[in-house]
Amino acid sequence: MGNNLQFQERLKSFVLRKGRLTANQKEALSNFKDKYLIDDNFELDTLRTNRVIALDIGFGSGETTIHLARSSPEITVLGAEVYLSGIGTVLSKASLEGLENIKILHGDVLPFLEDRVPDEFFDLVVMLYPDPWPKRKHHKRRLIKEDFLSLIHQKLKKGSIFYFKTDWEHYYQETQKAVSKNLWQEIKRENLPYEIANFPATSFERKAQKANRLSNELILKKLSK
Image 1 (tube, rainbow, N blue to C red):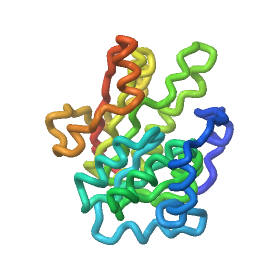
Image 2 (image 1 turned 30 degrees about the vertical axis):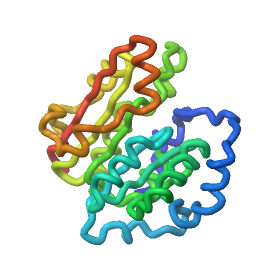
Image 3 (image 1 turned 45 degrees about the vertical axis):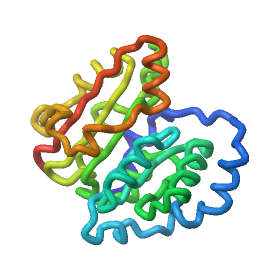
């Protein structure tokens, strides 16, 4: 672990937009942030006690985060999100369902992965519908590039899965090109456990369907250390 100059020089893959929180989101953040949110002092090794650990990056409204936690009590789901509205929604749902196997990072996942996460830590990393930055001049802001895939590979256990899905064909093609065949094996969804192969549709996926945009997924299995 340690600071990576290559990542430090990158443009942010997100822009924080001001948005209103609903009364329900505000209440959930106030009442449950101490239970679910992790801070700089949180010891990640406490999550390792004989549990499967999944990372859901940019979870939006939290459909996947909640699904994994609900369907697989043996999994600890660590969700990473920069927007408080999404976090408030997840905290509300998690508290209503009594889910105890969720932790939330509020902030940029890149420095978190680089500086705080031990190598070979995760059993699953999910990234569904990240910001595609569709304009050509903004492509450099896309999070998934060769260096990011290398970092994810480093943080996954051998044989573990990175699951990526997007409705922007160019982003999908560029991600495919960034995959090192020596490090990853592409697999099909039918070869995954049920709870992973049957993720619920997210709000981003529903928007893509409404706009008649085809979604593509890339499911990668880590081959080596």
